[in-house]
Image (cartoon, rainbow, N blue to C red; front, side, top):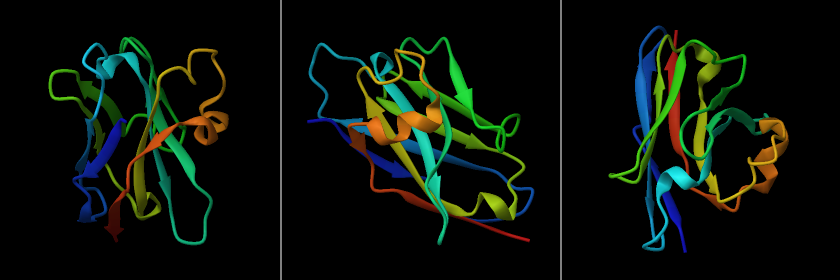
Length: 133
């Protein structure tokens, strides 16, 4: 059973940067992290969960929501079994609990990532990001 654990959240002033990590464990020996569809999502108090971005199997393609495009970057290290979210130029609207998620196949049919959120089979517990002005 694959498990995900986020880390790296914290408090930062507007304009600052943070890097979130999502460590995967419990993968079968023949599987690699890069074979999974993986995404980052966030949820602020009183708001619905929203997609931040995602990465497709093979790492050739990524998706970013317009709200973070040009500021956030998703990468993953197969050897470390870790997904990353580099967040630059943070603003107060980025304050939220951030979650990573994984699935073997859900992104392969090209659906919109805003629809994919409900179809991820594995979720982490979340890490809090707070941006102050």
